[in-house]
Length: 269
Image 1: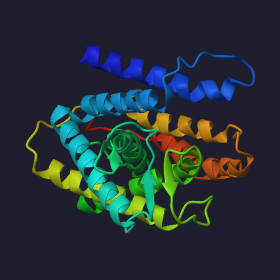
Image 2: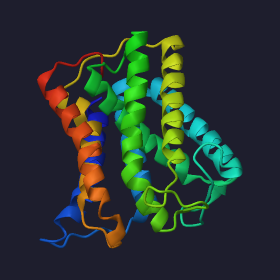
Image 3: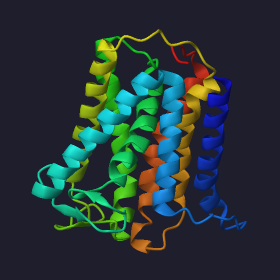
Image 4: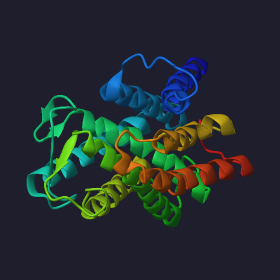
């Protein structure tokens, strides 16, 4: 358990470095080690999996990851093929090998974002890591889905502008169709609900308690990610997204941190 906790903290430290370094680049030059989008996604996914394993146990974590990866891939595959869920789009070759129409990296990216958003949603509602109240489970799924979608409101325009994916019909929101965000809420809400259904039927020992610091790590990562979007953009047309980031991700993340600091949390490992 101690070794696992140390690994979580090490992954957190690397992740925090990559999130903070771009913000400090105006004052100090820090190495980026050239990991790129793919390397960063793998690092972030490793953190989310490792932290979930520590907090939820490995059985729940495996279920959470597999459901997130499979459901998101199915929704994306349908979305690219039909344009029904997110709008009409396709992925370029910038994100590596594809399974069907969808890069293999994408299901990993969904989980790397879905887990911290789930933690933020839980903190905002005062939910534990091992929640059994169905009203709270549904509320948490909805709030976490909105928190995850906040992330995409500031991520998607820049990633599309960089050529990672292409929208066939340019939307009114920085070129992104409004339908995309309904698709994000649908996808994440589905994953959260199905995951919690699975947790309910899984027989596993009750989770123990942990420190606020460990509980808060994914929430801190989510909040730090705001700094990436607050930095000036090379594409000046996207600079308005800095305001969106501050008052969506920034607000949700800082409020969740305050909730953790002001409340006691239990039923986590």
